[in-house]
Image (tube, rainbow, N blue to C red; front, side):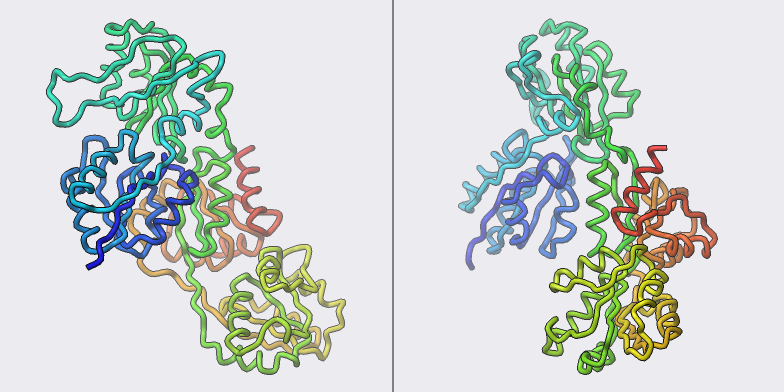
Length: 494
């Protein structure tokens, strides 16, 4: 059997955006991923390969290091491309060097893919630079706990005091009081030396406490800060109030639920995350395509239509897939094209189609108002849409004298296998977003009571919320994803 290879990969400090391109590419090729507690779950959720969680958290292990070493060797001997995904960088207090030694002993090929380390990334996200010409010209990084198998007399390697240095302790929260006391009594650090502690650095859960060596343990306890955390000691900590940026963003500290499909959630999730929110993706709809025979019939006589009206991105995708399946492309379209809004227009643009009509207000009623002036009496209109779509458009067009072929090309159904941990998290959310009436109906068929604010992409979606007996708290004035995000930000600015 062909022998495999092991990649020791740094996943970065927590923010999924800080993983390297090389690491992402090798993850996509992996046959087996063996990952730690601090490696973002988002890196492995979408992977279809074998995934093994080994759960290292400080001195607590789901799997002991010796077993991890044996597992790496065994999977490689099965001929697999194995990714050992570790938080931060594998060679900075990550025991990657020990794992590499074990692989050499077993005759297994390996490569190292470095990662962004938390020792400088977490302070940067807290507004604390490790060096600064006016505060520190060097830094020192120290592990904050002993080896599990070390004798009691083997102590932490405490640094010598230097007012021009920054000292960073990793994995030291359990020993915070001891570290502070020893630096003061044993290494003669002034009691007033500034200290900053960053827990869950670079993630939406990031918390920061600042103080001095004399009071930092008390302040960390009061702030509820625990592991994993970085301890930064030195004058650079004084810059935090001036340079903090990550936790001053407009949605910092807010937990927001995105209820769109898995495929469409990422756009809204990214925009909310960029503004500081912790995002929970809870897809309440799944797009299930219907039998395409009726649409195929319409495509075979596509030249008969004067207008094709698209009311969603999904309708555009499915229509053009059917067009291709019938041996045609956009060149066969002689009809005028209408799109309900910017998102649908953006999807049409992918097929090099510019709509002839896009209303200024992104609802079916607005399409009717604007198409009425086009003299559509006697014309034939194709309306490919979801089975749950409102009848407003078809009825209105027929009222203008048009012949409308409304073809149901997909259903929006409730996804199967909703994880229990997500259901429990919803109770602590600050906002739940709804980008369509389908997401509202499906959400409240799963969850009956929530304490969160309800944010709707527009009045139609808001009316669906009201019809179910709930009150929308936030309604976007521009019926787009950008408009929804802006409305949430405005709500919290109040």
